[in-house]
Image 1 (spheres, rainbow, N blue to C red):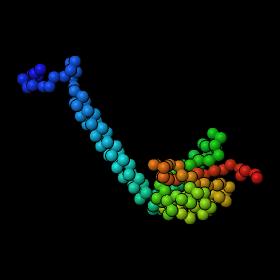
Image 2 (image 1 turned 180 degrees about the vertical axis):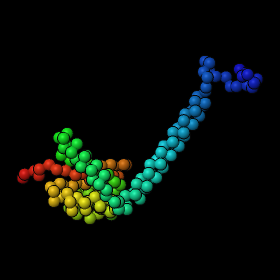
Image 3 (image 1 turned 45 degrees about the vertical axis):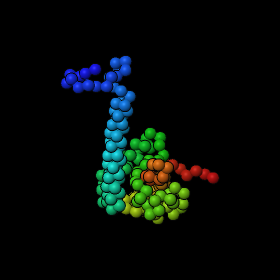
Image 4 (image 1 turned 180 degrees about the horizontal axis):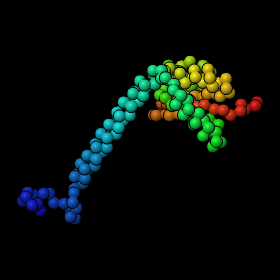
Length: 162
């Protein structure tokens, strides 16, 4: 069989447009392209996580707009019958023990917080705890079976009686 350029092509059984070898090569190229895209996406996510950690490792100035936003979220959640909201999510790398104390529900978990998470804890301790709010921390993401992100939850339900 010859093509338009009069070059000889291997015969393809039953008029198939590609041989099994050509199909395997095609599939390999697709797999390589997918892996390359996944690698770029993974690297981009890692860069974003590093940027977030850098940003959250430094104290922030709490503005009235930030306070109003939290109050608005609290009121909305309460009006929907909820009794807690997640107020902050951050990488476990912002804990001095990579989230171990939080994961084990140890009473001194707040001592492991650094940066903005520590600042959020101190704001709760100084202003919100006396007003009856509670604060809890939970590992909320488990990439590859390892602690990834921590969520800080602000709650206002009545304490359960024993």
